[in-house]
Image (tube, rainbow, N blue to C red; front, side):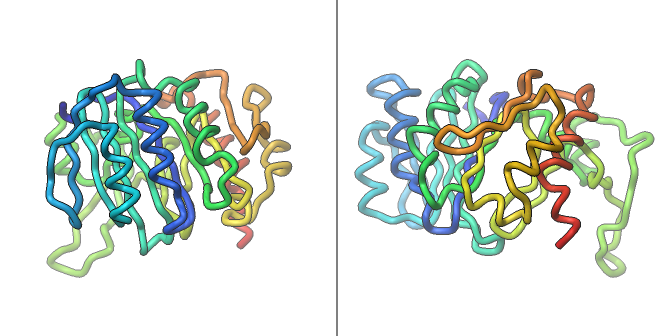
Length: 254
């Protein structure tokens, strides 16, 4: 199944080479997949092959892979070590019927909530985040999307490679890769204790600046929740910007 049909994505970020990916996969397999699920497993360090989902945990424990991808009916599971940004990541794509807020909350609590290497996680509407971060005019054309009225900027490359691209820096649904963290906003987010030091902020300061209909509470880890449900368009732009400022506004003081 193509990942393009999935409507939700769960991102989990941890300190580099410390994210317990075996535990994350094991819980996801046990709680989210039917018994006997056949998966396709591939990695740059291992040949692509098909196997039962229950057999993958042993492979992961013995191989110590730096990256891999698992695909199956209704989901995609990717793990990687991002040396440039200095973090590990797990990206799980699936339908909203699988990646419910309750399912993702339980996954975080059962696998990484108390782990010292855990930094942050968030659940997003996959299509919305993708559209909010497109900057290449060719992608707009391929998707049949109008660029009328969109802010433009140079890609910063010298002639003859220089061209105009869409400026996404003000989009409420944008994400920015930082050193050891991702600047992103979602209606449901989780944070480990070490996250706050990465962004020069504290949970208490964030709580003081969050909108009244957004909560940030601690239960094994910090959990942010908006009453709106997952953000799917710019009708919640003001709310998204308020959450971003509460979480990452302190970055401007670095």
